[in-house]
Image 1: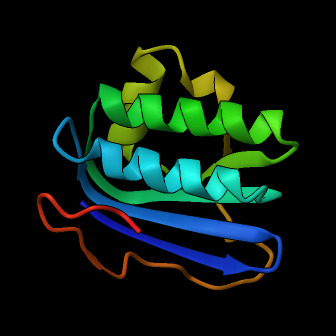
Image 2 (image 1 turned 90 degrees about the horizontal axis):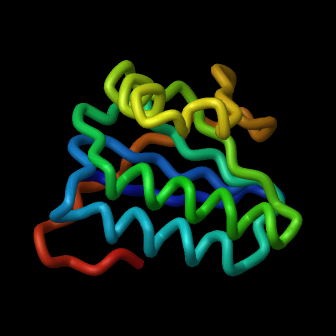
Image 3 (image 1 turned 135 degrees about the horizontal axis):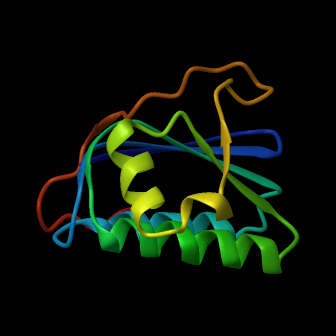
Length: 123
């Protein structure tokens, strides 16, 4: 899995690529919890490059959405891959997410910066 996080004004973009599974979903969860903890008004999670998405990935997104909502923020999913859409649909969680196909207002194309090595902690 590859993760990156960028902040541009009121928009925080978290980009995810590769496989999100039991072995690494905690890194996504920690990153999203940290982002939600700084009271980000809008968090965009880019998921176009995700090739596998397990239940722990769903849990990370649901938890982050709940935290952001409680703090007056908003979480949206940007161009989730077919895999992500299918898993969210099958589990009944897809309707709970706003899906966007355009980049955030800052117009920056955020891409995953580097791979997260096994055992490496998210920052």
